[in-house]
Amino acid sequence: MERIAPDLSAGFQLGDFQVIPDRNIVEKVEQSIHLEPKIMNVCLSLAKRCGDVVSRDELIDEVWGSNIGSDESLTRAIHVLRKTFSQTPSGGVVIETIPKRGYRLVASIADLPSATQRQIPQSCSDTNAEILLAVLPFDNLSSDEEMEFFSDGVSEQILLRIVRGSDVKVIGRTASFQYRGADKAKASGALNATHILDGSIGRAGGKVRISAHLLEVATGAGIWSNHYDRDIEDMFAVQDEISEAIANAMDRKFSAPPIQPIAPELYDRYLRAREDGIDHRVEDMQRTLMGLESVTHDAPDFAPGWALLADALIVFLYSRPHDDRDLVRQRAQDAIGRCLALDPQTPQTIALEWYLLAPFGRFLEQQRLIDRLAKSSGHDGAARFLLSFHLLNVGRTAEAVRVAEESSRLLPGNFDSEWIYGVATWYSGDFERGRMLIEKVHERVPDNHHAAHFLIQAYCHEQDWDAANQLISPDRLAQYPLREYVQTPALVGRMQYRNSDDIWAVFNSLAQPAKETGHVDAAWFQYSAHLGLGDPVYDLIDQVKLGPSGVSGDHIGFGAYRTGSMFSAATPEMRNDIRCVKLCARLGLVEYWLETQKWPDCADQVPYDFRAECEKYRDYPKDEFLA
Image (cartoon, rainbow, N blue to C red; front, side, top):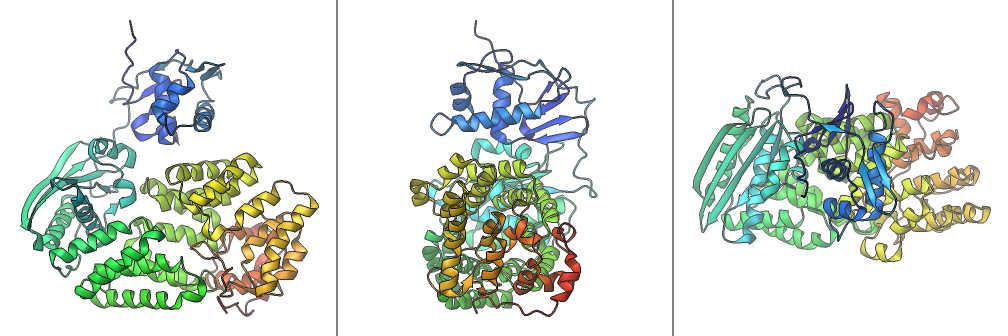
């Protein structure tokens, strides 16, 4: 008779550990270990057949799907699980490898202690408790599937209105909008939200029906519900009514200025353009820009249209050569100005102004904008990402890890939060964990060139050349180009051998274009300094200007000419050289450190008096970006 697999989804005991699958957590005493969802699924699959052998093919098929799974992913999952459960009372093997057959869980499992023995979460209706709201994408009840962009757009507008009008912390769209249809049941556990807002939208002609309900996760109780039958012209009023009702239901005040309504056909155009550009794919930007420019032309008093146009223009800006950016930058600044004239308190514009600043030389202005953004929407994903990213670029790596970890915890599934958390962790010197975090992001978003570049760095540091070379294979680069990290493949090809000729080849591949143009992206030379060429590196940097020269060979993209990698724990040689302080003065970092007295971590790590050396360069002139 076939054995019936036990239902372990609510959790089970494994030795001294409590395994809670729906939260992706393994707990022991006061220790809580977060597992990636697919690694937890491997654990659950083995536990359901405890004592039986489960083949590798079965595990790959169950967890990843036979068409997309890989031996490498399963091997890493087993490694992580073994490491997690290594401290069992017996100290023995928990997961046994059966050669040529698969794996089996050899430790015994049991039910979790009863609910009365376990800690019961405090009800989030307590006004002193921290509230974390997840707004799920409202179901599209229209017969036209094409109308999903409308239901998603309305759901996001409600999310943004709650963020804008109250102090409720709201999980970002990227994370919460992953859960649709039957998957919505998983949202509360996966997102660690205290409250869930869900609903549905039906649209027929000029009429709209919206149903919405608010659930308190800890108690499972519905604490607010309503439905609205309105003309589509009343959409903005309905969004505000729902947003205010949600805030009031959680005992939070709501106060947000009303949005100037626009004609239904223009609102559709706005939502469609927003959906087209939501993932910031450069190839979609021209179409998105055309749609948004038509909206702002026909509805010049609609502030969200101008804000979204500025956002799209900045994404487009980073894809343009440096000698072709002035017009795009001016258009973005004009759009920000129009938005602020209509709605002076729009928090989104603060982040957009930050993105318009040069990558180096204006760190104090960056800090002031981030401080303003934190006051207006400090719980927002964009604010947390920018703060973490800024901290990395000024060398405050340990603080960046703390902020990014909090952001990742509060905004699970948010790509920016998870990416910056992985990079910050790796830069801090926690190389294995940082690499695993970046791998997790790369697995979910394989076309993101930032995640791919930093994962290549991690593999090179571990000298896992097979993994690094796989990411820079010609076929993969043709599908997923590295953009501003275009030099990465050549560096990997030289660094893996590390003989004298290859070390000099790495340096010369960077030095030759610098000598030809008189300009350089100094952070790239950390690799040459790491390989022992500190003197040639600083001799060259002293002879050229920092930043792009305005020619076709300049690096473009968001990561170009940033300073964060100069503070990586993997390559300390460049900053351990006292000449690094002069370079930092030219970049505007010394000015920032002296003015704020917020010193980089390396100030207490380098073999010289870092603060005294910075004081010597207090008035040293900064290089002008794109001089």
